[in-house]
Length: 193
Image (cartoon, rainbow, N blue to C red; front, side, top):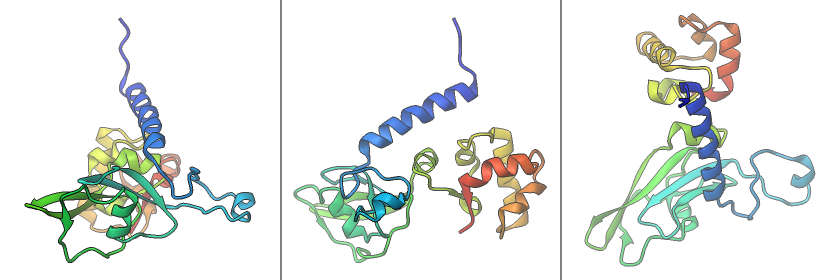
């Protein structure tokens, strides 16, 4: 019986995740658009760049795309609104959400709903083309990046902890196991916020 090595398992997982994400992404205008296309942008088609995952006590949980950063209420409305019987009783209804966050509507008290905001899973962010913030990522999330294994991910996180906040991705060249080629390979998956 043949078993799959770690890289093959990761590739199979990412392919499956891509299929699931494509199924659950519901863009505003009905067409999935991950990149800017000058031909279609000139014809009035909207270009979606902000991806928000909406979960919890909403009618249609999923990942939604927006033209600009939505408020919590706008994201909840895109998810079909809060399930019947609950009312959003939080003061924090209007902050704008950044691409790559998960908004969860939770039941607080009888008839009341609240909002929790966290990052999407790393694999989901990468599938949607959202780079990971090197200053706020753990080794498990880095391990999802192609070419970064568990040990290298741990060394990167340790380097960031010891050095403090990085100002440029070029600083990663000082991590044992990252040369110029490796840095250029992983650079598209990382960002500094």
